[in-house]
Amino acid sequence: MKVTFSPSVRMALICAVIFLFALMVRGFHWQDNPIPPFYGMTGEYKAHALNLVNGDLNGFLQGPNPPSDANVVKHPPGYPLMMAAVYKIFGDSDSALQSVHIVLDAVAALLVFLLAYEMFSTVVATIAGLLVAISPQLAYHSIALLPDPVATVPLLLAAHFFWRAHKTHSVAYSAAAGVCVGISCWFRSNALLLPLFLAAIVAFLFARGNRLRHMVALVGGAIASILPVTIRNYLAFKTLIPLSLSAGITLVVGIGLFDKEKKFGLPATDIGVTQWEAQLYNRPDYLCGRFVPDGVLRERRRMTQGMAVIRAHPVWFLGVMAHRATDMLRLARVELIAAQPATTHSLDQSNAHPIWSFTPADIYKADSAIPQLSLVNVNALQKVEGPAVDCGPYHSPMEFAVSEWNSSAGIVREQALRFAGEASTKLWMSPPFAVNRSNDYLLRLPIRIQKGSVIVEVVDARRGTVLASTPIVHSVNWAELSPEQQPFQTIERPFVTFAGDQVMVVLRNGDRRPANLVADVGGLEVFALGPSAHGWTRYPRVVIRAIQKLFLTAVFLPLIFIGSGALIVSRRWETLALLWVVPVYYMCVQSALWTEFRYTLPMYYSLFILAAAGLQIAAQTLWRFARARTAPGENRNRQ
Image 1 (spheres, rainbow, N blue to C red):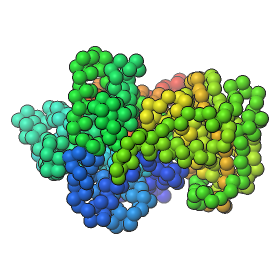
Image 2 (cartoon, one colour):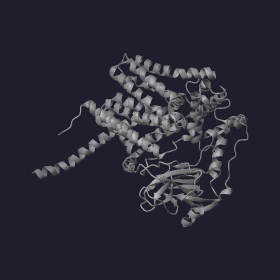
Image 3 (cartoon, rainbow, N blue to C red):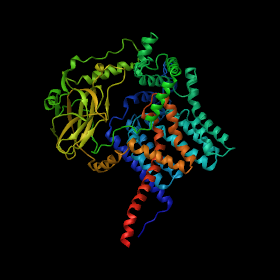
Image 4 (cartoon, one colour):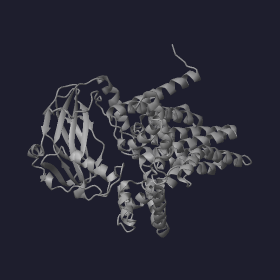
């Protein structure tokens, strides 16, 4: 008996599958990352939110000492507001906040499905929703306790409202689209100029006579929703700050990063900016922070310095922007879901003794045949000193970095194992050590990268299966340090043995191509955490991980262009314009500043819709080709 569903039931089932799939994928990433990505940056948002939770409304609105202390306006207030609401309801719980993140990003997958459903077929919409649900890039960033993933949902709602305005010719929908863009700006100011780009495509979506009304409604809605932040900033700091202050420092750092010859004299890191300003203006107290003291004044000066370089070298800067814009079409390399179940025990082993401990000499003895390996004296390594300036109640970024050095270097003994030379894939491996099956363990390994990048893996010694892997570990880039000044970073990686009884630790080259590498390892320790749980999750994890491995630029970029080409051939200019306006906006505007993948997250949701359309076209083409190849043989058999 054939079971049929009504269209509404079928839609509900598809939505449920996409939503639950997105929750599961993000839940696995959450389990694999007990410490959220970019967690070091969460503290400044949390401190801002706790002012409101503790009833300090004045501190939340203007900070302790405006306009000199401008820390409160280096980011828009939307994310601290959301954090404060979560903390007020659930208590000071990062887990509750991450749950909200995961649910919101699963809703984003649903919004992509619904938007693609209105533009294309059910098949394309389902593929697009599942691509967003499975994407390791989007899922990994969704668990970061930062405003970047949260700012995407209002922009997807804006796309929905704008498309409805196109279909119904309702000015109210255009105004709602503008309001949603403004709400997104409350979380991240990156979309501040997006309403102007949306207004530019009004000609593709509306007939003459209606265009001006929709433009005014769109831009007016955005201004109306952003205006409260602008008014707050003006009242507190007596100057026009539409949303936040960070554009100047990102402009300077972005120029410094691409100025390989250092001919412009601009720094390439945030802490480098404070050091540069302290020397340039003879103000040692500028070492206390990026936005205190004289936060507003310093940000204006940074913008002036950056614009001076752009005016003097416009062709060079256009080349930098083109390079960044091209890079934005690449999918970031992020950590995939682990094939093994996640650990369920506490990772705090500060008072525990390791069950296995290998000194650098132990590892060197096992791999002494590798010519690039040697033992170095840790005491001879050059350390970094903090600033000799009293910052009052503040801790300068450099002081924090030095304290991190001391805490990491404290577990390093007298020697370190150094790999120096040409690296292809595997650099070295530890001796195998015995473990119990289906148990949770924690690897602790201090590492210092002078040149290149590495990946640390825990591998089943008998089967070669990777049980745990770190993201790519780079050198520390917080103060334009020389290679000799690089600090040790403490890598802590949990893993589950499942069916294995012997494991080993492997260090691999973090670059896909052979590269020169200099890395020091201060030994390794392994702690037993207890029996593992959730062993059944290994099976869906293996399947999802295999699919996530396909999320590569080489796979998706052709599909995006195929989908775009199909829209051009069919002259569906309105669909093409709406799906490309956000990516083009970020490629044009964000490319002028220092950029990271998390800054441009919203553009990839619409690109996955184009990739879904391209995937359907590619599948249909292959199917027709296969049918055409088999058809002559079938005809001969019938004869």
